Length: 153
Length: 153
Image (cartoon, rainbow over all chains, first blue to last red; front, side):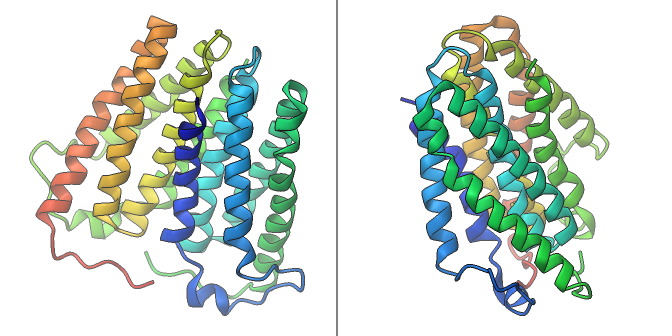
């Protein structure tokens, strides 16, 4: 039963949201009209992490799951990287590059999971949908807040 | 050929070392006598990331590789988390908890890889050895610098 191991990886990614909080800096930024309410973020990510860990557990025992699990590893590393870059280092352009790579990786992962197990593939669709919103948000915040200074090192 | 996907995950982890640099804060900390020279860190991590991505590529096609690849995903997420927590948020105690979890995960991964393919298991030994040094370093720096303030949020 590999669920606890995939969950450990997801907890590492989720921890970034607790350690690198948006705070006053983020509250002061201009945000687009489609920005979800604050409460939606931890709710969405909890659902996404649980579903994607469960989906990985479903496919991990299947023959030919190597590519699916390699993509799962890539997405969890990119996911762990985004939060400290955006909310810690406050580097919006670099955040945009990371979340775009993450979106492409999760799209490839969804196709790979789907081809092994339709249910596991479907379990990744909320992740893909949420990343479309999150990357749109990153892009608009980056574009609409050109003069926001970064903190000193 | 899954090497580029495992390498993408490793690049995400490695990027933290470029984005969250040690800098003047780290230079001013008391460090133990066994601290490796500065140049050794990027050299060691480059070797470790290449070897662990190559090891994962070797085992990914083998039957029963699910646990090995789940552990690989967990270590790359924990690895990506440690640098921004230690050098970005400057939370040494939390860094210690993360690197200890990482060390246990990599030890389990090495056993798991070894049981599938001796060469792949041996390719993880430099990672395990370096983590022993790095976790000892985190512990001593934490213990020997009790009054170092964290940056404001």
